[in-house]
Image (cartoon, rainbow over all chains, first blue to last red; front, side, top):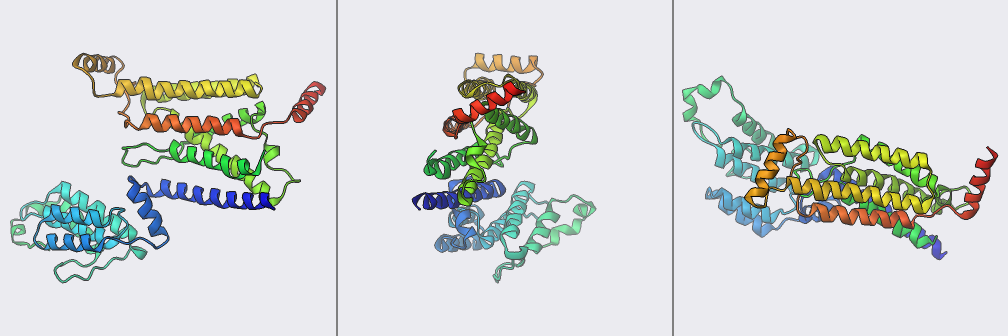
Length: 166
Length: 214
C-alpha cells in the first residue's frame, strides 16, 4: 500500500515536472520572474502590480517614455500581461515617431512587444479602451509600427511632415 | 530497487538533467532542445548502457509488475533517453570545426563502446571519461579561447590563433555560469546512471549461457 502511494506520488510529480520543462522550452523564459509569472499565468493566478502600472500611465501621459517603461516593466516583471505589453509597445511607437523619419531601433522593440501582447491576448485580439490613445487595437498599433519600418516611395513624400503622431 | 528511488529519485535527477542540459544562459533563446544528431548519440548511449547491464529495462517494465510500477519504469526510461540527448547536446560545441570533430569523436566512442560490449563498471568508467573529456574540451579549453578578457598579450595570441584557424575553432563566448551548470548537470547524470537498476547476476548468467549456446 505504501509503495503504491509512493509510486503514485512519484508519477504525478514526474509528469508535473516534465510539463514544467516542456513549458520552459516552448516559452523560453529568461528570468526567474518570467518563469514564476509564466507558471502563475498558466493557472490564471498572475496579477500585475497595479500601482506601478498607474505610475507608468502617468509618465506616459507626460511623454516620459523611458520612465513609463521602467514602471511597466516593474508592474509586469514576468511579461505576461497583454495590456501592459501593449502600453510598452505604444511608448516605443510614440518615442520613436518622427515627422521626417522614425527611429528604427525603437520601432523594432515596439514591434516585438506588440507581437508579445498579441500572443498573450485571448484569441490574439486585444483592444484597450483608453481615451488618450488614438490606436486602441493591437492590430492598428502593429500595422503602424510595421509601416514605420518599411521603406517605400511614400517615405519621400514631402507631405509626410504634416502627419500627426497617433 | 526501492519504490522511492524508482518513482521519485531517478525521474527527478534525470529530468533535472533534461532541464539544465538545454540551458544556455545569456542567449536570446536560452532553452535549446537536443538536435537530431544528439538524439542519435543518445540512442547509441542508451543501447550501450543496456548492453553493459548498467540499466536493465526488464527490471523497470515487465508483465509481472503492476500498471503503476510499469508507468514509473516507463518514466525512468523516457527520462533517461531525454537526459542522454540533452546532456550530449550540451557537451557538443555550437559551431565550427569543434562541433564537427567532437560530434564525430563522440559518435565513434559510443560505437566503439557498443562493439567492445563492456561490463557495467567498465561502462560507467568509460562514460565518465567521455563526459569528462567533452566537458573539458568545451567548457575549459574552447571557453578559454573564446574568452574576450585577459591581458593584451593573451588577446593578441588568441587573435593570431583565430586568424591561423580561419575562425573555425573559436566559439562564441560562454556565459560565466554555463560551465558550472554543465558540471552540475553532468554530475547529476552520472549519479543517476549509477543509481539505475542494473542487470542482476542471474540475468547475466542467462545471457552468458545464451551467448555460449550461440
